[in-house]
Structure formats: C-alpha cells, structure tokens
Amino acid sequence: MTTPPTDRPDAGFTIIEVLVALAVVAVSIIAIGTVMAGNMRGVRALEQHVALMQAARTLITVGVPPRAELQQGTSTGQAEGYRWTIDVSPLGDDWNVPGANVPWTPELVRIRVRSPTGALSDVRTVRLVPRPSE
Image (cartoon, rainbow, N blue to C red; front, side, top):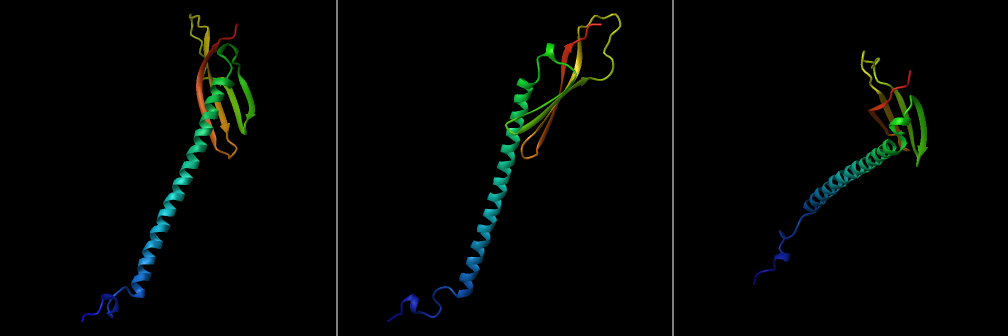
C-alpha cells in the first residue's frame, strides 16, 4: 500500500520557505503602502494648490476694483484665512505719445495671496485705467 503524500518526509514546506514567502509578502505590502502614502501627500498638495488658485481667482474678479476706480497704491485684506495684497503701480516709463489723445494708461496689478498653510500665489496682470486729467 502507498502512503498518502502528507505522510512522506519530503511533503509540505520547510520553515525557511514559509519565512521567505512571508518576507516577500511583507516587502510587497510595505512598497504598496509607501506608494499610497506618496499619492495621498500629492493629492493633499494638489487640493491646497487648487484652493489657493480659487482664492486668487475670486480676488481678481471681486477684489480688484473696476477700471474706472482703479488707483495706484496697495490694499490688503483677509478672507477665510487667506491673506491678500493688491499692488497697483505704473507699468514702465511714461506712456505719453506726442500728438495722441489716449485716454488710458496701463497699470501693473500684482495680486499676492497667502494661504493659511503658508503657500503663496503671485499673479501679475495689466489693466488699462483712465489717464489722470492734467
């Protein structure tokens, strides 16, 4: 009569083989966990960046006064933990064109928004504003 396979001395795994298999599984799980943690940090950073850009966009559309009311200088404020600064200054040199009656002058508008976490957005744009009457 033949003996069943489990009763043979060479049947099954040795303890070394089991430990190697467990080590391979543990290394695989750690590698997957590291990748997932990196992805989570990336997602959090992206969410913070999107929130900062949304705050800057809102400030550009709501916080910058209309062209007719835009004046040189600095204004600051804070909303929902985001601190902002709007600087309006002349763009370059004198824009007077001899013999031309141009009612507008370009102004540099610099908008800085700092998030509660310290991230900073710096947006610069140019607006045409009414030339001051002389």
